[in-house]
Image: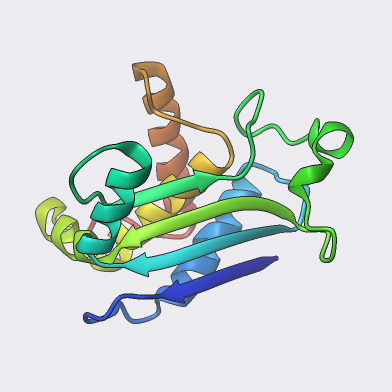
Length: 166
């Protein structure tokens, strides 16, 4: 598995952030029983950068906590069996890894939301990575039922790795 991390954040960085990324990416892939070695790109930024990207790609003129850019259009979330026959373009020809997509996290939002929700920065950061990984595997939260499924899954992933709200 390849996790490519770019730290563009110039503020105080969360200690151990690389380990959290690796731990949660692997846990999410295991949870969804992904049968492939995967590649994920994670970029850490400030509110200004994520605001610009949010405006450009989503036409939302404000900063957000995390953006996900899935590389795959899934017929059904979390199902990988079709890829071997129909999804050859989603695999890196050199490494053979499944190219899941990109995650962009605002470290400013991690700090603010951890305070707002009363839990650690580590937990908030792990939550945002789990949330984005589910997006990269085809999940969304556009309606109430999808939202409930995502919330349950991300909470179970975090519980597996002991990232609790306390």
